Image (cartoon, rainbow, N blue to C red; front, side, top):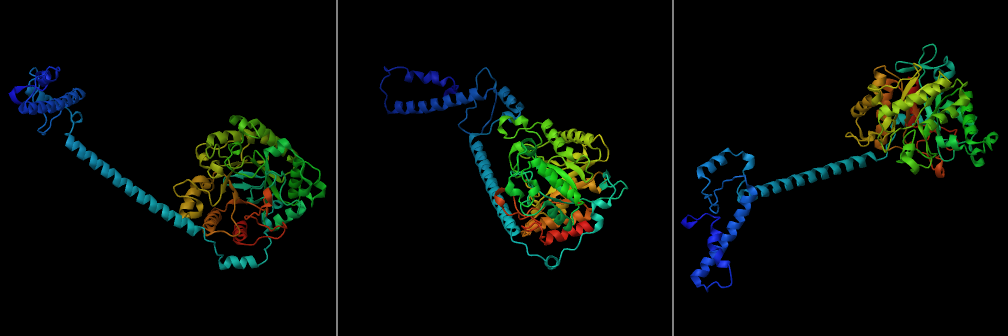
Length: 519
């Protein structure tokens, strides 16, 4: 600025030009001076505001519009020294540089977003194609087609539990008899008492003894028999139409029918493991938090069937009491697919509850095996590494896992239907295989299953699973025997028998299970 004026003095010098209506008329030269002064005043006011905002921040600029003059009380050299001493974080770039930097940052961010969107689109397209390929129907191989045309070979007698000295106990990774001989669980699930009809399936088609004989002919030496807590607490009368082939059961209540079926199985020489499947009598397992754990009283009034942990244990005592003296009722599978509130359940919490329930049952009968399933819908028993279940009676604990084609959802590697064998085995070993391979404790794969007409993905899961089960010689339980579901009498694609409960479905599943039974 001319004349050595300081920028904070300028408004006082020119302020009179705007001080009142009595200002004299201006000529062209004065008008131009006024306009210039007005522009300078505006710019100076803006700089004053910026200076006030930035104090004690100091900045330098090569811009010609910046004023390098400061108050007389501040020596210019001292000011420059302060600028040099100020940390870089307290300096500001010139406005033009800041705008350029902002534009660069914006463009880089947009480029990254575009690259991410393209990568995500490509990944989704790849996954869609892979899923589409897995949904193609699987074509049976020649060996499977040949197996399906031959009559089912009789099962080896060594599988029958009547050839073993009872009671059973555990030793390392195995279930053994009183003489130390391994008894391998080759089980099938026979469901219905856990559903809304309160009775196992097929009693309107065949006598229960006939169905027990079918189970033996298929080679299974044990049955997992599920029930619902509501069956115990409500104990309704079973509808007559569901018992037409078992006239001696007509008019009975659900608990009496359940006990009669259990006795028919054990009379046929089949071991029984009773399973608490669900709280409410319905198909398991959905997203209802009321059925996700052994107790739901913490959920308040939202549950149709409310249950405390003590209720759960008393229901177990009620359903097991009639079988205390039946040596072929060999165990209790404490709870099906514990998963907490939509998939979250601390292993330590479940392990402690299982100990309390298991110890109460062992006080009734010290010979029962206590089966404790994993968390996350029984997929994960890895928590037993750090916090094993400890019962009051030694050598009675059996862990259990469930493995299906859709298992593994939500993980980085994806569902088991799309896994390679190496990826599948890594997950099995982490979840529960370490207990078998390390000779720590028995693991019963209490539920596995597949459709009789699988997709490529479904068969990939099955082939990987049975390759691993054969490698470790595992105990297993197939889901399920039933050809029909209770609700709306819907067809069960996982069935091992046809609607008559006598004719077996001979396909790749029975082929692999027979190989595992007899190895």
